[in-house]
Length: 478
Image (tube, rainbow, N blue to C red; front, side, top):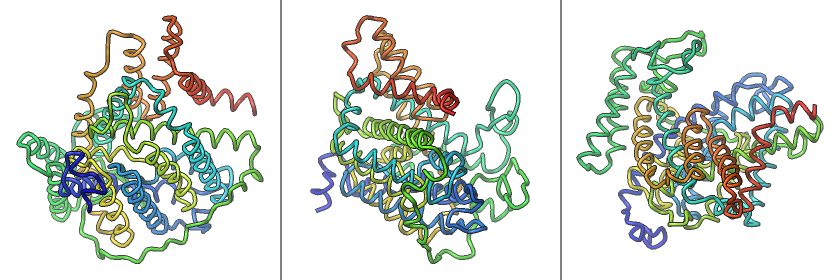
């Protein structure tokens, strides 16, 4: 029954590979359950209130709803979209909601705008517009998007592991480790996980990425139990420890099971923002959310399609309409749950690297998220340093697609180059996609080949120009 429904054999996979892939995807993105509360749970709205309306933060409340929505939406993606793609609160979007929107209004008003953006993007899917834009992108630019995302997630892995860090000053924005030196036991855990996974992959061991994560976590727990290293930043004291662990300290928790509280659901006001800010400001805020959500997903879905071999010669993906519909619904659902817009996660590529090819992997990931609502303390055992080697490995696998780009055609090569480098350099998928689209259109016009550019791509490029010029436009409209 599973094989027939999810087309497991047809896509060259097995139930075992799907389960392993689902687990790996969960382990590489489980951090969002702990990180989202730190981003939106510690921010205050215009009335000085924390999310949930209290005078003090309630991080457990945010964590429970983050895990619940991720679980439900990821299972929905698996069952309806039959695609190895997991969803959760979008990083970057949640920061924008916390800093750029909630600071101007109440949390309920801010989440109302998120719901509104989700409803708009859902309508764009139902009318066929979002799918049409997806198909209007040249196939080689889709490859460039996939390659760029590969570099992006590899950089995410290196940064989260502490292998690459911000300098804070000087002409170079990032450097190796702490001031050009690798320090601390956590870096050794990362290196161990990376080389162990590489070795297992070379030997063609099934479950290489999953084994690497589990083995590294065990080593990390032993090291922390023995040496009491602690976090690299202590929020209570403000103390910075360059040799400490990233987000999670891999120590055994006092308790494993807790009772979740889902009281945040439904705390949104769809048009309440109009009582706080002018209509033009509301439009610009929704537009910014919409554009980021729209094209981050296009990039992610494309990258997963290339990595899993599910994309055809035209760059199209099976069940594309369903996949985009679930992602659009997820945006509105995230606002309804008061945890910011939910979107597709590129970390799903780690599960694909483990062999996932169908929606069964997403169902496994979703179940893990649902269990996390009760087992949040257990998830906190897995440190960044144990999970991030998977992102570096998958970044390499996605980079291998670069050979499919025609580097002799400047109308493709230059846009592809900008797409690839700007995603990691700006830490933003949409910026890379936008730069690639705009450059492609400009070069084709210069070459006298404008008729080769799809009209929708012209429209989207114009919208990206508005996005890139949003700051002067904001100043112009006051």
